[in-house]
Length: 340
Image (cartoon, rainbow, N blue to C red):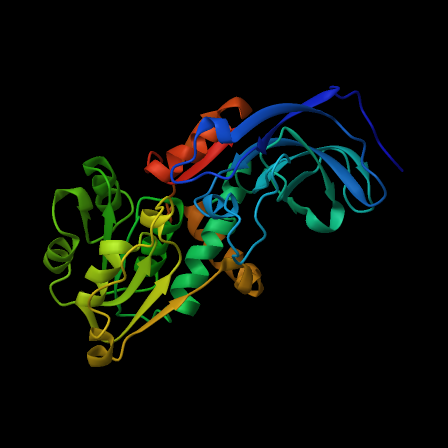
């Protein structure tokens, strides 16, 4: 039975007008008004409360073949979102329920019930389901424990460590018995956060000097695991500090996302022969089987305060694009969230 309270006639949503070359520009996008539709059979209408903006979205703005389809020109973009069900035409989801789904970049979304995951706003703040207990959290968990085969006693280096994924990687490594956790970030304030709040053993500002030199000083005995969010000189530095049997999990390479020319590869790849090291890329979508285990293990850490997280909250759908560009610039500490 359809339950349809009084709703606004229009919803604002962001469309991609042209594919950015280099850094995205405001004229590549448009905030437009669209009619609020009613949910069809097996669908729910969600009033989005929080939207996620993430670095991977830059890749979807390109037409290049990738692991996920590009955004369509002239149509609303997509991303993680969490909100309240305001109309339901589906069994098992009622008006007033809160759900996590993937139709962000808009105020209202009609979502197939099969693609909506009910979440409990009493167990954790709604925004946490987009970050520490959501896709970014699972990315950290799967990349560190499965892809990088972390084991107790490993020395771990994380780049982009004050970001939503990186901060969680370092803390999970610490909670699971890493011998040393080192992070890089782009400001002295973020470095302080990593050491004083997140419990990293050492951290450095990559803008202060060559990454390779700073990493050697922070991890003089080398590293066993590198979790890569940045690429470029960070990846080369990690290879240079890799211990025998070291593992590198490549999650992202934000330093090259807006390049118009191919970035040069690390110049020291031959060192992997000496160290018997390995580099492996991964996508969180290949590891959703870990979701129950992830929530079971991480949620108590979050509840107890053992695992800390930060959010950078931007208010208003009209600022969604600026929030996304802020992620590419590194403006955020922790997860960048747009509150509607």
